[in-house]
Length: 146
Image (cartoon, rainbow, N blue to C red; front, side):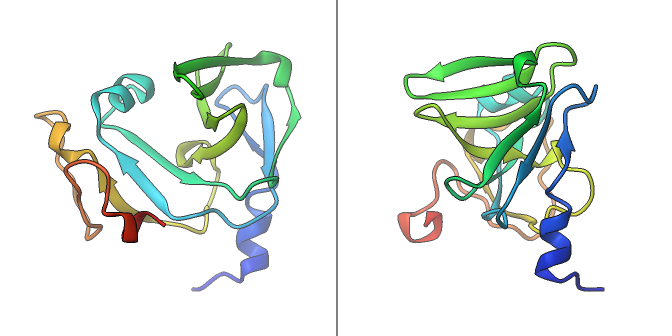
C-alpha cells in the first residue's frame, strides 16, 4: 500500500530518542537514505554503520528536551547530536545546523529507503550488506550524490 506524501510527512512530526526526553519534528520530506560503513560511523552508531537521510534546510525543529542534547564535533564544522541520558544519536550537523537525521530515531515509515551504501571499502569484516542499493568504496560519484 502506497502512502500519500501527507501521510509520510505526518510520521515525521513527533520523533524522539530512545528514552523520549528529546523530541523533534521535520516539516519536509527527507532526502535520499544512505548508509555509511566507515570506521567512524561504526563507532558513532555502535554497529555496521549509519543509516541516515538529509533534511531540507529550515525543516528540522527541536520540540522538547533540547537541554538534554549533547553535541560532539567529529571534525571541524561537522558533528553529531545525541541524548545524554539514553545515548541515542539523533542527527548530524554541518556548520551548527541539522544536516541529516538517523533513520533509527524515526518511528514508522520515514518515506525513504537506503538508496546507497558508502565507504564499503572500509566496512567491518563481519558486515554483510544486503539489498539492491548500490555500494561505493568511498563517496559516490558526484552525479549520484546530488
